[in-house]
Image (cartoon, rainbow, N blue to C red; front, side):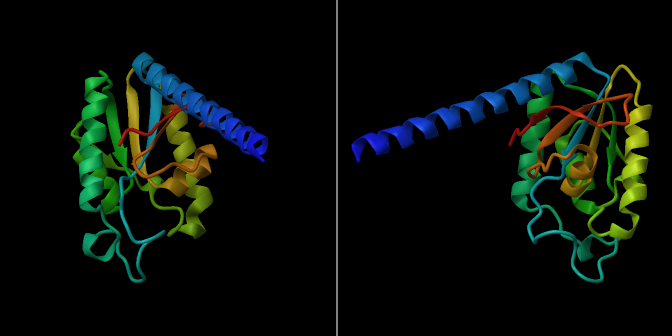
Length: 191
């Protein structure tokens, strides 16, 4: 029985180490890409409790009708922005979904002024427009050929539709600018 416990422990220890190494590689690749410039950072908005989507009857133009950032979400976004600044990462342009939780995340980062971009609207709520929104987002990423980086604050479902990655709140998935494939180069979970 002891041998079996030891074998299970060893197996789990090896698995955790492998996962940690993969996570470290993802982060190293993301930092490298952002330092090189010319990439797109797709960030899921920070913590906004209340499930998925928005309450019935929500209106994009009225934050009081939406799921909004928690105090933790605002604090996490500030920490993420500070970490990006400490690492010397700057963004030439910042775009945000028109949803309040994304706009507030972008503002709380403290990295510059964000413009809203309808093509990054919530594909869960706007499911009848999902294909058009995702196509528009891919086209926007493909057009990003600037030397600097682009930051897009959007929703987890949008990032998943673009990259196949389901990010945590506040997580950043870095993709190559100038390509409509939106293939992930690396991921950062900074809060």
